[in-house]
Image 1 (cartoon, rainbow, N blue to C red):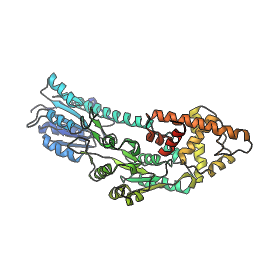
Image 2: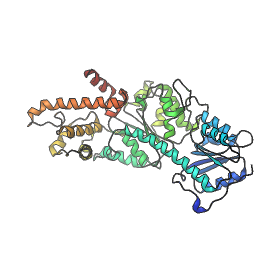
Image 3: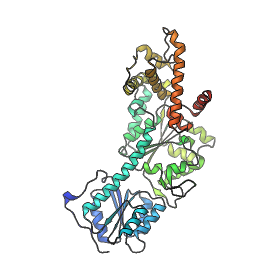
Length: 460
């Protein structure tokens, strides 16, 4: 091929704030075109690589997770369009811009159907290709952000600052560990009882890491059916299994460049444990039904409320996977063991929730705070937040948490009212979770057994 790009004036060249962090692969059999694109992009992108044919490009894809490919169509041997069809069929989901000097409407339609994000005709000006790149990167970013935001809507309320607040020595030690380990790429295992703030700890690790501007993707391993968890994590191709009407990216794809948080990792099925171990070791994933592995750049943070050491001894959890996950362990003590954290947390939740609900805050007197500090909090920080919220709704604190000897008449009525609110809230969350009891229990901050027992008592 003899066509070349047409330079543009510096002020005409488009700029995308996401271009600087991008990794781009240029595939063209014409050295002049490759040199032009590489020179133009190398000063604007994090990483640029080049290949003169699809065979060389395939080798580069095996080793590096590129964000975008600029692909020439007419090349010696296989055409770019043929290779693009194979890429999509093998589970490659990144953006591809097809460039060519010989194009008609039929070729353009075939390119878009094959999965090209854009189609650029040679010769082109610098700002034309840069605009195409910017559009592709922005579209991919928006797709990932929308996915992450949709998942965040299902997350428990309350920010990291709230859950990590406290004055106890153990909470101070956790904050110090987060500051030390967060900037490193090390895999972290967060342990502790349900409701102690394991996801918030993972978010805090992400927030102080170099990946802070990239996605944080949480997944509850216990809330996904064993038969579909591989597809959820790694993605799948169309027709890979019954019901796979179209190809789909996995959670590793959406977490690319960021952090994937595997909550309740001890609930992973044995077969999935083996596959996760391979991903950690090879830094590649294979979508269900795909023939090739795809490089990934994801930091893993795992969490569990189970004793993984006991599970390893019982043969329910792989020992080698446990060692790969437990490079650094952050243990979160139950709230009953850090009473000094109760008052700061209660004040924060009271201020946040009273503003959210549009009601006047209740008075957190020394007596109330003392009673809250003495309460054992089986549901930990999550339960404390729920108690504050229910108290604001009902206008008083529950007597089983904050006794009041001067309110004998209310003692009998209040638990009944509280039970009614609890029932309505649990059924509402269950409905929002589509009837999935495991997911509803996660959102409520209770165990699945507790939810089952409540529903049975209500004839649910």
